[in-house]
Amino acid sequence: MRLSLTSRLIASLGNQRGRVRGALVTGLVYSLGGRFFTRRFYREQGKLAEKEGQPQLWISLSFDVDYAEDVSSLGEVCNILQELGVTASFAVVGCLVEKYPDEHRILSQAGHEIINHTYSHPDNEILHPNERFDDLSPEDQKNQIKRCHLVLEDLLGVSPQGFRAPHFGNVRDRRFYQTLAELGYSYSSSIISVDSPGFGLPFKTEEGIWEFPVSCCPVHPFTALDTWHALRKPKARHKKAGEFASLVTESVALVKLYGGYLNLYLDPRDVAGYDEARKAIQALKAPGPDLPGIITFSSHLELLQKGQVCNS
Image 1 (cartoon, rainbow, N blue to C red):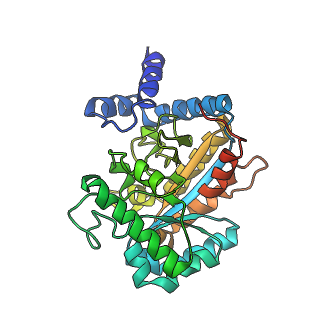
Image 2: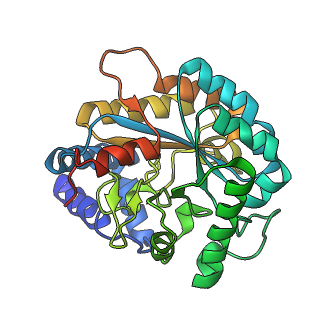
């Protein structure tokens, strides 16, 4: 009974993109056990990856640079990534790039990928308070994206092809996909895996934009596996020594076991401020002959567009 019920629940979640989950669904999943749900979720992801010909055992590592503290941590983060031989994707905010252009140039100079994270990050309590990205008109959303794009071109010499919505885990309106298509963008990383139609695998939207969902916490599968959830927010859920790194290792193991995709998201200031965050990145490079490859969104997209991957 439990297995059958959970299977139906997972299938339902995998096809409810953009819908708001109710307390009943959340309570049911957590009563069964987050890890029980997550294991079955990755199993379904692996089956779909094999069916669709998606490349298996890939990891994306991305960072959001949306506070001054994140900007000041970029040099240290780049050094850590260089020591590990890892290339990552960084979502940057236009007004912060205007204020700190030299600090942001470190990213492109180090070979990392830069993606558009809007001009002023609506609902940021410092940069743009009291107005959610979801609540902006289509024209205002478009202006947020265009203005950031122009800043990145003018100050960093970068023309981004990717986008991440502010507070992506809370974004329910997907109007921005049409805007991205109109502006010539290719991909986005703006939803969490439990809200995706393909169990967290990259998928192509109706507007022609490839979406790379952010992976969820194995214990709390309706929440992103990120440093805010684990380490920094009030009543953070995974602050015990070694716990966050262990969750990342657990997620990598599930991808290795079933074949699929992991998209880990962190905040730069947390990597600089928490040993646990640095250990989590190191966990991605733990020794082993069958490790997943760590790949940027744009590099993964090249595989998809070259036809090495099909999508139903």
